[in-house]
Image (cartoon, rainbow, N blue to C red; front, side):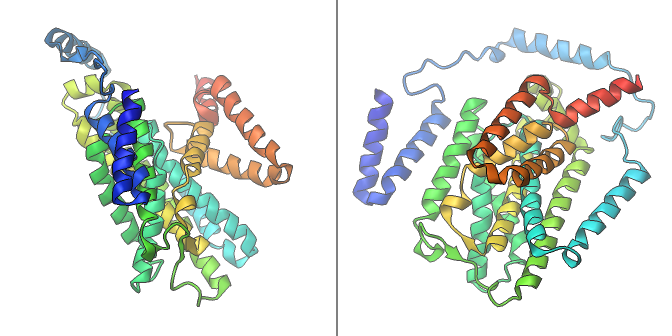
Length: 394
C-alpha cells in the first residue's frame, strides 16, 4: 500500500510539471528506492551475515586452503595465461579463411542474403556482450536494450550534425561506454534480482527521456541523414562489412580478454564473489569494467541497427525483445562460453528462416526448444558437445 501511495504521489508531482513526466517520475522514484532501500521502504532488510568477522575469517581460510590444494603450474611465470588453451595454427587459419570468405559474400550473393547476415552479425554482437556480462561476470541484466537504443541514437545525433553515419559508429560505442560507467554507480548498489530489475528500469527511463526530444523525432523517430544518397547496392555492402567487422572484433576481443587477468578475475567472481574479494580481487572494479565492455558491444549493435534500418524510433530501438533475443541465443548455445552465442545465433536464424511461414507456431517452437535445452542440456548445446568430446578423450 505504501509503495502505491509513493508511486502515485511521485507521478502526480511529475504531471504537475509536465504531463509527459509522470511516468518518468515514477521510474526515478522506483530506482531511488531500489538503490537506497532494496528491501523496500518498510522492509527489515536481509541479514548481512558476511559482515561477521568470524564468518569472514573462516571463509577466507577455506578459500586459501582450496587454492593451496590446487596443482602448481609447470611454468614459473605467474601470468594470467597459465593453463589457458592456446588456439592452434589450424584453428586460427580456419577462422581467418572463414572471415575472408564472409567478406567476399556481397560479390556473389543477392542483397537479401547479406541483409539477413547483417541481422545475424548484430544479434551475435549483442549476445556475445550479454554472455560476457552474465556468463562470465555473473551479472544478469535484462536492460541491455538501453545501450542498443543509445547506440542507435548516438549515430542519429552525430549524423544530424554532419558526421558520416559509418564513422559515427565507434563514437557511438564510446558514448555508450561513458553512459554505462555512469549507470554502474547506481545499478551496482544492487545484487541479484534487484540488479536485473534496476537495469530494466534504467532502460525504460532512457526510452522515455529520448522520446521527449523533438530534435530526435520524439516518439515517432527520425531518419538517419547521409545515407539516402548512397547507391543501395553499395550501402548494403558497406553495412554488411561494418556488421561483419564489429562481430569479429567483439567475439575476438572477448576471446582475448578472457585470457588475461580480467578473465581470471571474472571467473573467480562468478564462482565465489566473497572468496574472490578475500583473495584480493577488485570485485567492484572488475564488474564495472565488464559492464562497460558489454555496453560497448550492445552500443555497437545499436549503431549498426540505425545504419541498416535507415531510421531510429524509440519503441523499436529500446525494445525489450533485444535483451530477450540475447538471453535466448546465449542460453541455447551455451552460457559462459565464447562459442555458445555463435552456435545459438546460427541456430536461431536457421529456425527463423525455416519457420517464418508458420505464424505463431514459430514462437511456440522456439519456446519449446528453450525449455528442452534448459532441462536436458543446462550448459547449452555447445556445452553438451564439449562435454561429450571431453568424455571421449578420457
